[in-house]
Length: 305
Image 1 (cartoon, rainbow, N blue to C red):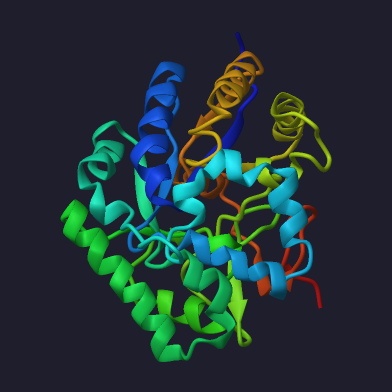
Image 2: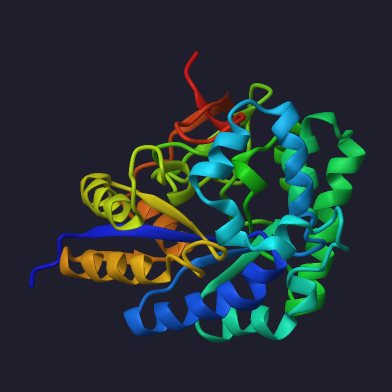
């Protein structure tokens, strides 16, 4: 078969203890069978997922999203109470053997957060020093687990600030994946172009679509396969808790469809390498915030004007 030259970056977010313990091994097994590599972003510190309940009172649309995605079934009672009625369990630092298996099997690993919930809910209210400390703690934990510093970072919930983006410039990253968008680009913050390129998630995620634009996961992945085939630099984000849990078979099916369509599913690093290999410079885009369908709250993204 003649290659279509199509490529799809696969990003895997790990947000909870159970996602790390059960979801990651499941994903590693199915990716091995599919012959696919991806970029895993690990939450390193405490699983405070239960504190998401406070968003019911603070963020319109949060409760409806939890209901339509059947969060209680997907995440389980232990996770939904973690950090509130039950103690917060550590995530990647509690399961270093699982984390190291990611790299041992040829995938890429990066930092997602120290405290995913705190970053997602409180970033706008954190001081520059607090933002720096959140990043430093996560990076230090990554070094403890892997013996080397991470080369990529992805902001929880695709939510970054000028302070976090600026501080990342000092961390020796090859690239970051902090936002939503359409293609890899060089971010402009405060009128200045940064060094660290951004690889945005370009496609919708299962939790955004399920029960909204699509009633079942298979229909969602059908639409993603079509969209990935049309886009030039598509990136799909999956979650260890979903596609590594009750929707693992649906992800397996999607990877089979991608292979049949001659779409090469690979790490974000390889996607960036392919993009840079075109010889065209990455576009520069001013970073700001906006919204995406199916997701409550703001996300980081390039803005016009």
